[in-house]
Length: 367
Image (cartoon, rainbow, N blue to C red; front, top):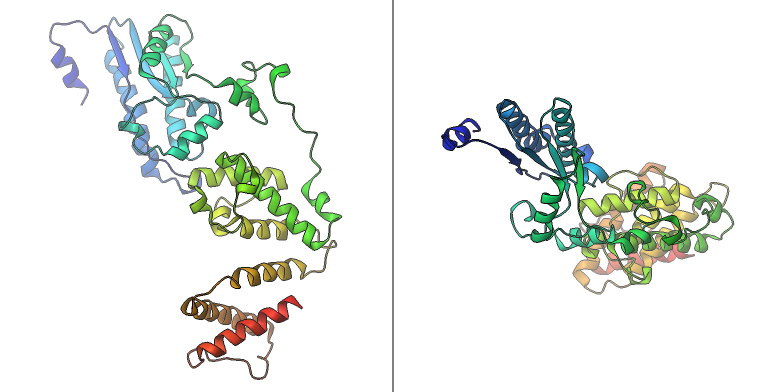
């Protein structure tokens, strides 16, 4: 595909090359496939290497590669794109070492619609803004391009920053600290007491409230809510605006705050702030700080509260079937016989019997 380029030039001398091609195929690193990696590398790295080899004997004045800020700062779900950008930066250094012209520009997000930006959502743009990255306008981009060709380093980062947003980051990324001197940054809070120690002195209700507050605070931080109280603890994360990338951000923030290594899928496995808080509580609660079943009973209390809001009779019947299945498995696992008079055959149970069962079992859990 590259050889016809020289045929089309005819007698015109080739004086510069700009490699701006690229594709996105985002995915979390554990789920990234060889095909996703190869597709991104093919358009960026393989094509750049071909251009390098085909033009090395040409008398070029410029050989410009379009890299990305994710190669410099990283980006959730973009490991393949970051690797491709880093390879372009390395090629620029290699060419310079060989006495050839080369400039690799790590661009931020261009303020254009369509193309490689077609899949970028409003949530993505909001996340970039919270991290201090401003979009590159077309005129600004062209000015940065011209300026990059007049300076010496072979690999440059070309993106504007919102310094106020950078100062508000906690912590400020190491690569950006020179832009916001220590005296202008937001003061950091004193070193936090480990979560497990904070829980140790609390009653069960207090522990639940503390962990739920932690989850809501981190959710607000990821989504850009000003007040954690705006986070509905019973609303699913997907309805709150989470996608796979922001879910990983939340997982990382909670893992750091709780001192845990959490599964990548933890947010989707526990799909509401309340459910996720219950999971975290079970992971960090000291075994000697409460009765072994206190976390389970607390979860049952919350379940009772949720079920009390179910008004549709058909939905209540469906939920009851699910609860009976869980109870049957529980009884089977522990070898406990069903209580006298309990409904054991759901296929033959009436709606009244099913609803009776819910009321009885949840009443026992609350006592």
